[in-house]
Image (cartoon, rainbow, N blue to C red; front, side):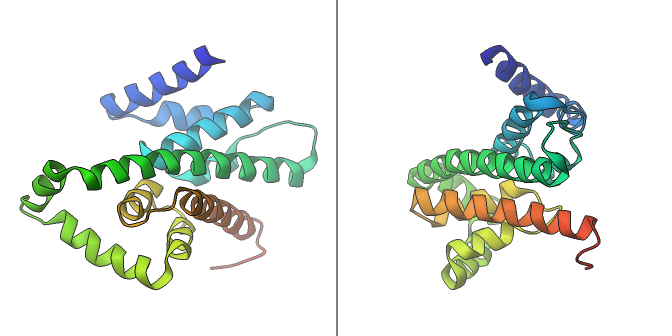
Length: 188
C-alpha cells in the first residue's frame, strides 16, 4: 500500500515539476475496482493542498464495485470528501504555520501586488460574514481549484475540526451539485 501511495505522490510531483498533470487525472478517470476508491481519496487529498486540479474528475471513475450506480456515486463522493477534508486539515496546518512566520508575511506584503492585503480583504469579508459556511460555500463552486479557498481560509480560521467539517461539506456539496446537474435534475 505504501508503494502505491509513493507512486501516486511521485506521479503528482513529477506532474507538477514537468507541468503536466494529465497522468494523475487520467489515472483517476480510469480507476476501476475497490482500489479506485483509494486512488480517489489520495487524489482528493492532494488537490486540496498541492494540486490545482478540478475535484469533479473523480465522478468520471468507471468503478465497478457491485453496489449499483447510486452506491458507486455515493462511495465516490464520500471518499473524495474524506480525502479532501484530510488534505484541507494538512493545508490548514500549513496556513497556521505561515501566519506565525513573520518573514513569509513580510515577503508577501513587499511584493508588487500585495497578495496578503488583497486576499485578506476578499476572504476576511467572506469569513467574517459566513465563517465556516463561507468556506463550505466556496468549495461548492464547480471547476474552481480548491487550493485557493482552502489556503485563504486556513490563514483566517483557527478550529481544525470545523475547518475539516466545512471542507468535507463543501466537497460533498460540489460533487452532489455536479451529479445532479449531470443527471439533468438541476439545470444551471
